[in-house]
Length: 170
Image (cartoon, rainbow, N blue to C red; front, side, top):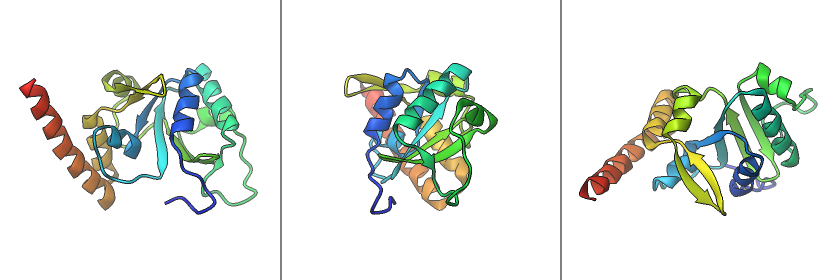
């Protein structure tokens, strides 16, 4: 849950990433909500493509959002640049709009190309944004091993069954 001083609005970071032509897929709780999940979430989780040009675009967006490492000790030296992102994979940031996690290697996810290819696209304020498929979300939630994620996976399986039933009925 965000702290009282932290604003939570995942839309501006999603739009900023889209406007900067970042190659990303929304995963986690926000993506689950696209399928009807009632689970609350207090961060924006995105998987991202690791090409140098994409890393530079991500850095520009994160700087514009005044990103800083979340949970890091005060004064910890951290250089937000493409080289740092290239050297790591998964980063958690606090921004002007709340928590934004960028994950090159989400647990339980297929390789990024497959995650992106299977994603669904939704319009958010006139921009196309990709969201992980419900099946990939289920796999990612299951893979964490956390009770809250196993519960979320169970809910997503029920939603997936309902979505498939509706599609079959035409």
